[in-house]
Length: 342
Image (tube, rainbow, N blue to C red):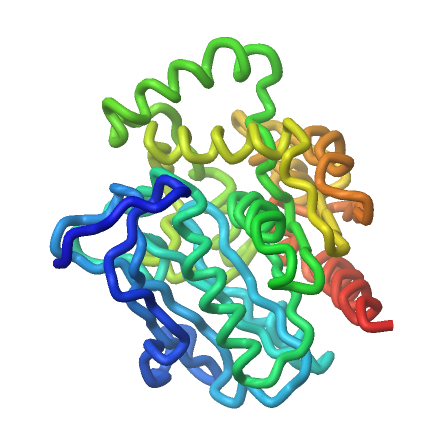
């Protein structure tokens, strides 16, 4: 592998730069028809890559995606992947191309030797976000909306700030814009994580998942068909290096230095449920992962044109809520996106 060279953002580039022309030919996707996936090798790294293993990103779409003038690019959350056919179909029926981006070291882009979501600098993923947007533009989209869930929402917000002319609107689905621990996070936890993230990036500092993931995949409850090798539903570790990257990005948002020039829709559940030992009512009708109050407080930091959508009965990933709730959420965000061109 060529020697990487430093860049101003703290990431390093492995020449030559990747372009849209480097995407592979479409292949059948694991979700089956009508989805295909394309991979693209990446040319930047942040130190979390596996030596000798090239990072890649993957775009999942319909084979006929392209030719429409409007497209949405979707960014997944932590330990997450695209498995939302009903949500995608609604966008398709509304006249939008839908491109789900699996970012490096996650989901379909995980390669042998990779540690899942071993990201040291969140902005390193801006490379694949830009490539997915360029792919949508090259295939005919004149209007592109960037959508992100949870950590993907944080990624989308920072990308839109750093690339003000790249997209026409931003949709945030339960974005992880702050740690949600108040004084303790700012004065105790963050400095410790900042240090550990450098000297012991693979140290487990927290866990995530378990009950919520199991509920999503339980046929008697959520009933979603989750490709478990892409999105584990059991408890997963949160590593110090990843959490350090997230906290550094969150501090940019919380300082008001990440304002977005295009319209933003911030969607969240109406209430948070218990994160420890959540009961059936919490799992089926609230956000048991993040604090919705944190999202509500952060909305005003994102820019001058921010719409807040509270979804009664919504779960953390609003698109995976009870069918009636998910349909409400999906119809509302599509209507908002449709209005961008009005």
